[in-house]
Amino acid sequence: MTAKTSRKLINILTIVSTIIIILLTIYWYRLGIFDSQAKMRAYLANKQIIGPVVFILIQIVQVVIPIIPGGISLLGGVVFFGPVWGFIYNYVGICIGSIIIFFLARYYGKPFILHLVSEETYQKYMKWTKNQRKYNWFFALCIIAPAAPDDVLCMISGLTEMKFSTYLLIIILGKPWTIAAYSFGLMYGAKWVMNLLGK
Image (cartoon, rainbow, N blue to C red; front, side, top):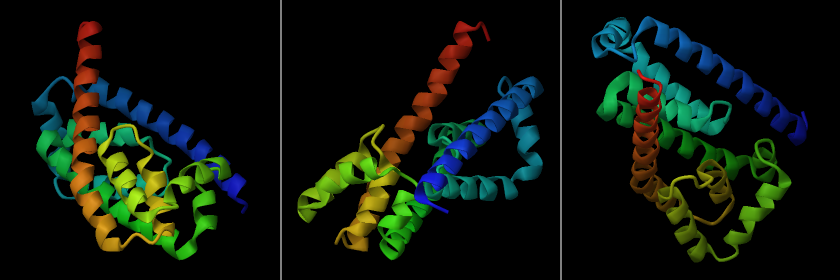
């Protein structure tokens, strides 16, 4: 399978997964679990162990193979598991996924990355790697900053001379800020939309 074909397949899977998520959201909305904490707890009562495990696995997969929009899965964690545990599950899954793609890129190199992003995107960020020290700072700032292309940069980092210990430290210390910003921003944004709709 060529890199171009892989990217097309990922785009198709992203569309399909988004449609599935929308349909599931409509289903859950009709169940009333977004309107009542009691209904949500009842819905999750028999999923106390498997639910978090499955959700963390979903987060890992969406980092390594981006077929699920990251913002949607982050919001899902907070909605279904609450602000504290939702944040923790998001954090654990994304950190594990980030570690995996670092080593995949380091082991398989450029061909692996081109299965997920275009040559143009690859070259755009590889320009920052000419000076390792400056790239380390650039990477750290991007991990902290919302809306930065985290997953692409995690893969690019695997091709550089960055030590894994440096990478891990940046991920562990930087990810909480963006996860919190996305999770709670999306959650309150969704509530604002619901209020506008009179819910």
